[in-house]
Each structure stands twice: as C-alpha cells, then as structure tokens.
Amino acid sequence: MKRTLCLIILIPIANLLHSQNLFLNQKGSFADDKDVAIQENTRMRLALHGGYSYQVAKISDEVPAEDREHVKKLKSGYHLGADFSYFITETSGINMKYNYFNSSHEIINIIKNEISIDFIGPGYALRLQNYSKTNALFMCMSIGYMGYTNKGYGGQIKGNTFGTALDIGYDIGIAKNVALGLQFSMLSGSLKEFKITRNGHTETVELEKGQYEGLGRIDLTIGLRFNF
Image (tube, rainbow, N blue to C red; front, side, top):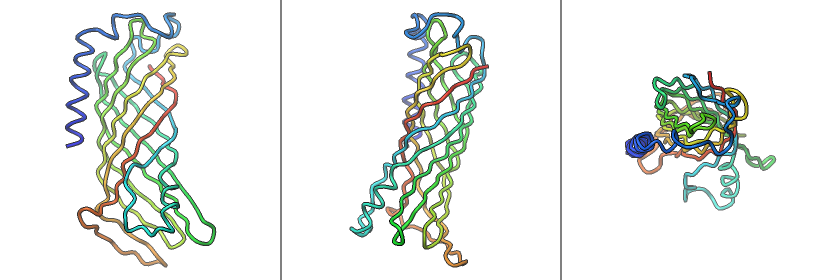
C-alpha cells in the first residue's frame, strides 16, 4: 500500500510539473552560466552521499525500563550510499540504489549493540531541470533487498526482508557536470524472522504478526552528483 501511494503521488506530480514547464521555462536561481550546466545532453547520473539517519519504529513495550535509553541511542546513526541513474528521456529513467546504515551504542561490560542495514535495489527516477540546466529536482522510488545485522556481547542477529525507498532531492550545479546534492529519503521494511547465533549455535526465530521488527527510517543526505 505504501509503495502504491508513493507512486500515485510521484507520477502525477512529475507529469503536472513537466506539462506546465514549471522548471523548464524559468531561469535558474543559483547559476545561469553555461560553464556549470550539469544536466545538458547527459543521460547518466552518479550520486555519492552520506548523512544522518533516524530509525522511526516505535520502541516495544517489552523492552525493560533500564534498557530503553540504550535502545533510544540506537535509533540515531549515519548512512553512506550510491545511486546510478540512466535517463531514457530528459525527465524519466531507471535507477540502481545502494545504501548502508550503521548505529551503535555501548554501556561498558553491560550491554552493546551495533546495527547495520544494507539496502540494494532498482527504481524509477524523475529529473526536472531548470531553464539553464544548472539545477534539478530529483525523485526516485526503489524496491529491493534489505539485510539486517545486530552484533552484541551475547551474539549476533541476522535477517533480511523486502524493502522500499523514496528519495526527494535537489541538485545544485557547482561545476561542469558536477552538482552538490541535498536529499531527504524514507526507507521501510519489516523483519518477520531472523537468525540468532550464540556460542556457535544458530537458531531461527519467527515473529508473530504485530511483533515484526521495523526497519523504517529517514535519511538526511548531502553529497556530490556527477552527470555524463
């Protein structure tokens, strides 16, 4: 349902903006010099980025009171990522996305957790340029694989699931075919089962409906975009 709603929102917005030429028929607000035109006659876009992340899942009521502060600390972390887009037309194309998230917190000799989440998958990309092609609004909806790892004093938890990602960003030209990118992203997914390894022994745990482990988070991103 979330993926359907995102697509329902993205596609009409893109068509409306394109048909009315809101971006293509006005001067750029940051640069008009052709020397910093970042999108002109380019089909491919490589984005490298990183930033702050926050996991949005509610803390379970089953978490003991003395551990809740520790779990809260694990909600905040950082992410690194890369996207490669190929534009079939001036405004629409396909995208391949990779994103790595990490957070950790430790109370020495009491409790420790280091969480990492990988996302990789294809997506549908939209790019709406300004008149001088120096800046561009970028949107992408991706689906793919999410891998989860949680390491601690007591062992390791691993799992994987189906995930989605929605990116909305703005590329600001700073040099020929190079842009500074600012982006807001939402990722979602839920673990229904995982494997726990302790003392060399591994067991599979299946979660009941309503107890799934939420992997949803928001990312605030800054990075460089290369167009060619």
